[in-house]
Image 1 (cartoon, rainbow, N blue to C red):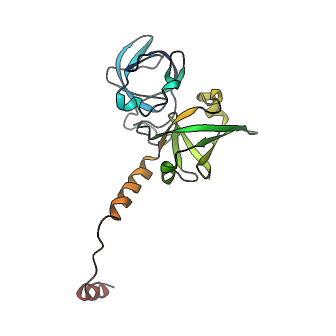
Image 2 (image 1 turned 180 degrees about the vertical axis):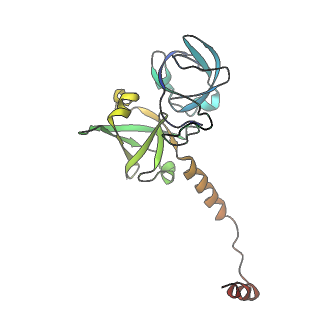
Image 3 (image 1 turned 90 degrees about the horizontal axis):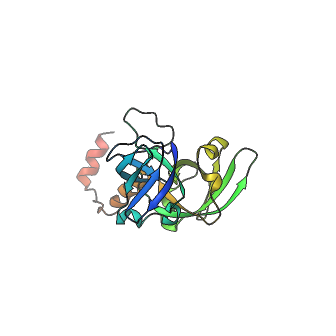
Length: 209
């Protein structure tokens, strides 16, 4: 689990399709989970200059690999420890879909980022709800059709790489964990045949009140 607050900017040293080598000051251990641009990956090697994480075929199929090429800067967050403060929102590090940065707009304090989402993911987003983009916990300011507006304050711009993102960039999206589970529960409820009440049951329930 993560909470969407970036702890370090890493630099991709190499990406051979199976392993990412990242230069970073982040303290890690063998087998530790690290969110790289929001994707939870496992450390398989480390030294004083950085670490390597394993990139499975499943993970690679859901990631914007063009943003993980040699020389690219990435968001890094180590896994949460139980009892730690959750200053963002709970994030699993499982990328749901890729969104696309449509445009940005500078505001008096911060900037607005407009991101287009695939239609099938829209039921899991809500006005003022939480969403993780490139591993950063953000609040949705507005939803218009398949585009969400994110109002990013100055301190978040300073502590992330958002200010360097260009129009058209594909970004990692993880929807709110609770929204996904609620949707799953409701999906199964609609599949359960509704039982008709008998007259005896109606009488019984009426006596309870």
